[in-house]
Length: 350
Image 1 (cartoon, one colour):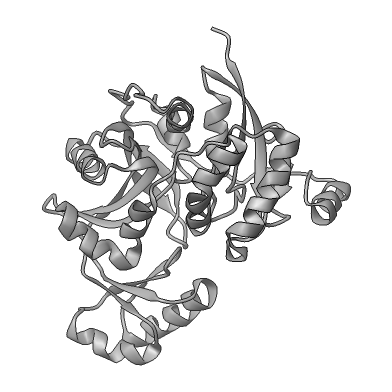
Image 2 (tube, rainbow, N blue to C red; image 1 turned 135 degrees about the vertical axis):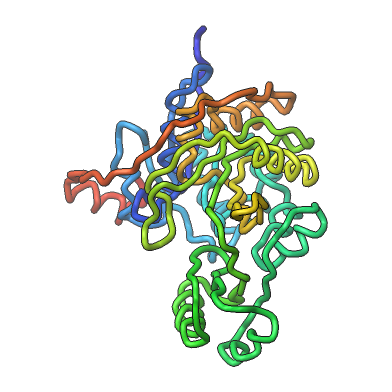
């Protein structure tokens, strides 16, 4: 079967110790059986490794930081599209998604660029600050949480929480605190990086299990692969994991996707307690950095996303996946000429 040529722009090229999903998403797309992809990287920093991975990324352009807003992003994307004729964009960072969701209709109608993203309501309802209410609405157990805006609120936490508890940023980062002093330390560190509010969440004892999944926007689960972290970095990121045979976890994922009519990729972060209960810790509204494990297990979720974005019609769900497949990350030194770094730094493209 002749593969269809398609130009796909992808963000999240920072394959560092807290990696973005861009590189694994690109690897998945390169293995598509239906599409012959040209990959346009969209970067924020000049040292994102994906910029220089020329076997994976055909051309890279810098784009404005999310804080710049939708107008500057639209202008930049308009220029890139005039050169590259982008068919689809796959954003991979939580912090940038709001701008892309806002621009989805404009990009489709004015440029013919398609995306398949959560709706604004879906994006907002799963925010960490709203997750407890989300759990009540969709009948999923969620640890008690509360937003705080100042270290002065820390002493009052003892009225609602027992220690240890988890201190979370509104976009990224989470640290366990065993004392009020540790809460203050984590509060200052995380708020300096990601701003306010800070979310305080009750710590739940158990093993962390995650799911990468994709919904068609109509309540159907197109694919879902669960995994357990085997090795965790000091930032709490999975450096190794194994796919699980866990029907209850898959059923919970399908329940959430059906109830929310989730549109696009997602990651569920959950805790399985010793008595077999599941608590939802986070919903990330995009593919996780370990999404390539799903490809290794027989489900190419990024390829399915392309089908949903292009076709706008039913996509056949995956029925099974391989259990007991592992992913193990490794570091790799890229040798880059200074001329390439200078080019992306000065011209904004490489």
